Image 1 (tube, one colour):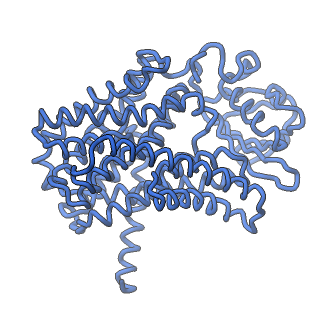
Image 2 (cartoon, rainbow, N blue to C red; image 1 turned 60 degrees about the vertical axis):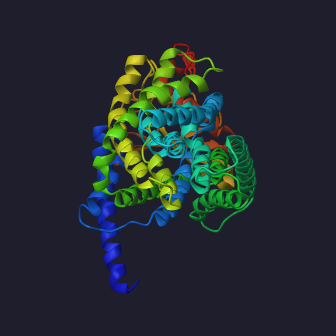
Image 3 (cartoon, one colour; image 1 turned 135 degrees about the vertical axis):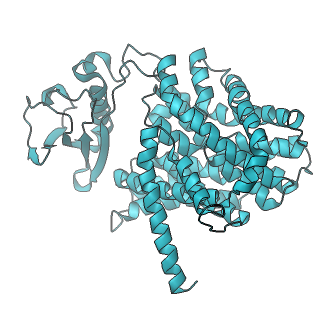
Length: 503
């Protein structure tokens, strides 16, 4: 690459990135995952649009894997274990039993209704089985769902990539000539368990080292944390284990450890994950050939309908059978299984391996991912309200971040009072933070003040609180409780008696 070609590439990349960032605002207003717009941007730039030629599925697969590592790392680092832990079993069951059942249902229908041979039929089912972590995180974290449901969906989307990608890879590499489903099943189990254990070990060891190591610059901590998740992937992949399971578990452990500069780490990884999503989905749009779409459209509509209205509900009912869940919760879980662009990523595997009819499979998956995401994502808030999946106190949490004060072994907690928070109107003394915690400063507009006991908080305030590290979690929990319940938080607690199934 010459300097001139590099200049052109940087100019084009910067322009695409700016358009993609603007598209985030559009997607928020429409209630859609931004990935749909990114895919369409890629199509517009491709062979049937501006004319950029990109037809290298092997390179696409490599880039897609790298992007998924960052996306899963961000998902694990930003997931609160306290909220996921009570429903982790449900998420794990959806990510394993649900994947198997969904794959089987779609494969049977594809074989008998669409006339596919068993290999492409099973491949189609396995490609469609996982939900999209990026779509789920971006959609559900804006929706005030009960924590039982949001935690289960986040755990599922973080874990189900691993079994699906192992299954798709084995089928694509073997071209259906393997030693049978028993050996494939044992391989999947080995890779998942091995990857999860290795990710846990890397996360625990990495967290212990970071807590005992004083790095010379705060900006190094986010780099080291992200590098540890990549290390987990690399070691697991080298050992023929599931690298994606290792990434998510390592990130989950690191994100819930008491590490220095957690807020900076989270912001850094979130920004990098956005960049990875934009690059990934634009690239997949470039790889798509619109000329292949008409011949795959009818099959895509049928396969998407089977996946959405038959396979997903059956897999949810089968996976949640051992757990106490209401019919309404199962209905919402069935509809909230957003596929997004992850199936498109997985469709590059048979394409790169030269599987028969892989081009057609890719076109089917691409159409289903866009069409049914456009149908499902905007209706989730309405369905959640109709099914009663939104808590009775559906106010927004205060945005809480912590920065370490190393010498004092304390944290500086930064609280924003967002619109709709019941922190509005509460007096400082009514916060009742733990003894030893100090409300240091309130920033209101362009002014700041040292609050007194009777100072009332207002919407838009930014509050700086100094808390000993041992009291940080209790302080944040108390602030969130008041943000949800207002002055009655002392009576209801953070869960609240009005919603006993919230966790």
